[in-house]
Image (cartoon, rainbow, N blue to C red):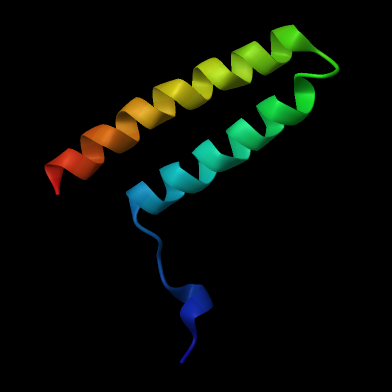
Length: 57
């Protein structure tokens, strides 16, 4: 009935955070390349974690 109370899995949380970081990195690339690179680096670390979790299940 109420799906908003359903807990998200760790994989879902990481994927959502990865998408948000990549979107922010893309938007910042025009204004500030250094910050964009930092966000992209963090997102790539998350992608590695996501791939590990996908291979475990």
